[in-house]
Amino acid sequence: MTLRVLGIDPGLTRCGIGVVDVAPDRSATLVHVGVVRSPIDAPVGDRLATIARGIREVLEEHAPEVVAVERVFAQHNVASVMGTAQASGVALMLAAERGLPTATHTPSEVKAAITGYGSADKAQVQHMVARVLGLAEIPKPADAADALAIALCHAWRGGAASAAPGAALTPAQQAWAAAEKRTARVARTSVRTRR
Image 1 (cartoon, helix red, strand yellow):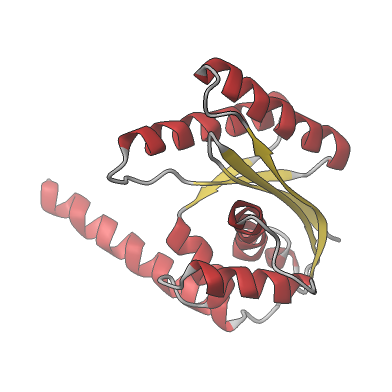
Image 2 (cartoon, one colour):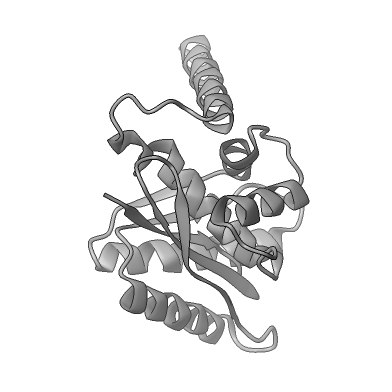
C-alpha cells in the first residue's frame, strides 16, 4: 500500500510543494510538484494568504495522507527566518485543519535520507530526487526539488518504508538512522549534564 506525502519547503517568496506516492519497497512516483509565489511588495498577511491558497489547492486536489515540512533553523538573516517560519506555520495549520498528521525535518535529515550524507550540497540532493522519481530533468526552481526531497525523506524515515516487514534499509536510510542515534545520544547526555 502506498503512502501519499505532501512535502513543503516553506518560504514567503517561494514555497516549494511536492507530492509523492511511496510504496513499501521505497519506490516513489511523482504526483505533483510546483512552487507558490507571493509578491515581495505585498503586505505579509496577503503574502501568507497567497501561500495558504496554493497549499490548500494541492491538499484538495491530491489528498495527501501526511504533510512533511522543512524545519526552520537559525540563519544570520532574521527576516528570512521569520518569513520561513510564518510559511511553515501556515502549512502546519492547514494540515491540522484537515486532521492530517504532520512532521518536520531538518535540512541535514533530508540530505542524509536522500543522499546518505547529511552535508550534501543542493545539487546532489536535487540530482538524487530526479533519479529516485525517474525524472528526465531536475524540478525547477530548487524549492520544488527540495519539497520533493522532504516528502521522500519523511516516507523513507518511517512512513511507507516501515510498512514493509523486514525491508532492508538503503545506504541513505542507514546513514540517517545512524545520525539520528548520535543526535539522540548527544541530547540525552546534554540533559543529564544540565541536571
